[in-house]
Image 1 (spheres, rainbow, N blue to C red):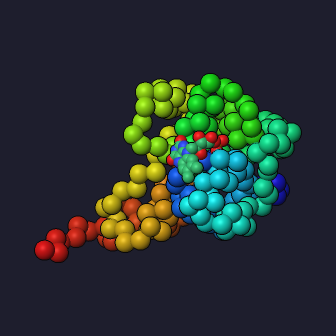
Image 2 (cartoon, rainbow, N blue to C red; image 1 turned 90 degrees about the vertical axis):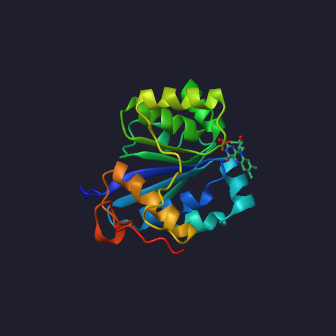
Length: 201
Ligand SMILES: Cc1cc2nc3c(=O)[nH]c(=O)nc-3n(C[C@H](O)[C@H](O)[C@H](O)COP(=O)(O)O)c2cc1C
């Protein structure tokens, strides 16, 4: 990591759930952020879902300073001695959620998240499934109680989004807020752009 005190190392893990536009927005925003060194992991499930819904993997990985292989349990994020300032799992599949809730460290995403929790560093989960079964709800509660921040990809509409990018970048801004990273990705409540719109009919 750069010796510059202000640089924050962030780890973005992408697992196999259907919300890749959010992962892409986070990779773009964090990769371009002047105070971030962005590292990435993509699980095999994540790679499969990317093949189905896009974007091409390269559109995401080019924003990473380093890509760590999900099968490599000796990669740097597997150790608490590898410093970072926060881990995001976006999207977080229900399979990964279950592995985290039970402490089963079968791949580098699971192990890195486990380490992040034990080191009391920020862990942000962006779970994607609907509807949710009881086991999903139990796992979310369990991880929330362990200190993970649970952020389902549910953007607000009071900023009058017009494109998918409006939605995904606004959501990415909320994630950056959790990490204490400055941004101007979306207007904030109370700012002039958010004046109520008149009904068009
Ligand atoms: C196209 C596609 C979409 C999927 N969407 C979801 C989803 O939205 N949520 C989910 O929990 N699993 C979803 N899955 C299933 C997971 O990818 C699967 O459970 C996988 O084992 C997850 O592994 P991982 O968590 O290690 O990436 C999807 C699978 C495919 C092929």
